[in-house]
Length: 78
Image 1 (spheres, rainbow, N blue to C red):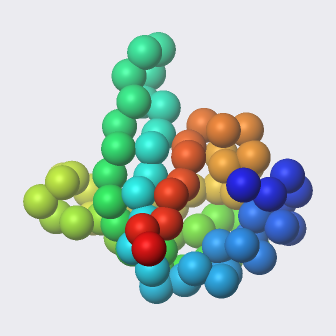
Image 2: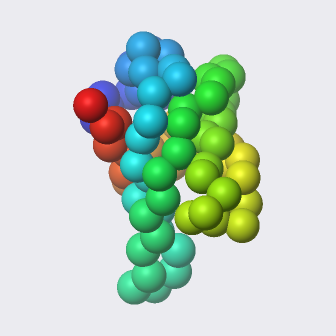
Image 3: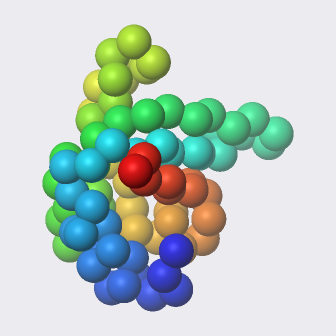
């Protein structure tokens, strides 16, 4: 992933509408992995719509800082 907030946003702008896998830190040694669609990018956050069968929460927003600090990892499905 890119190393600045602006480059992370530009990279995500290019993938808007695509299916992606989000791996997030959920606690000390707990990791959650969910698949969703990158719906929208905003100046400070981006929004992911999750599949209802995988998660009780349908829409989640993440900060570009989460990607930069590696609190979440993103992988786009080709």
